[in-house]
Length: 179
Image (cartoon, rainbow, N blue to C red; front, side):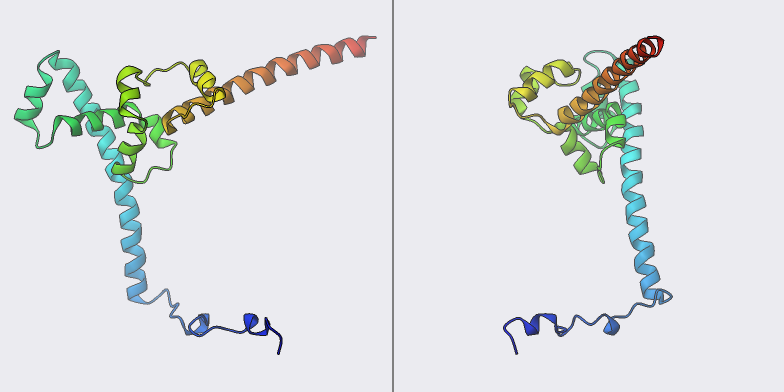
């Protein structure tokens, strides 16, 4: 028997024929239903957070400066920070819908990544993609949100260049054909 002959042998406990695989089994059905319910529930949580953020945004805008914090304290069972998170989720719903974000906590984390100092000094909400590109080319670290925005920008730039190139190629081909 060679040194590696035992590698091809079945290992104890690894034989699939010993595993219960009957999907008509009520326990298996219940496990699958619970899993699907959890996945659906996670989607609903994020969607509800977006709707809540929209409603809070409308109220905040109507209340005007200085009235938001007192309104939060008097009317809702969560903090101003939670309200800000909901509003941020609403404002970034398009971005979140295109990301593999499974739950509320990961959505908040995704939207708030980056250093606190950087956020206060240089808010990223409407940062120019050209500036982001320069930072990227200089080797600066970008948050996932900035990376997403930059990928979108570069994809659009690529499309523009391709369209221009196609038009030029067509013009050259017409010139060649007319010769």
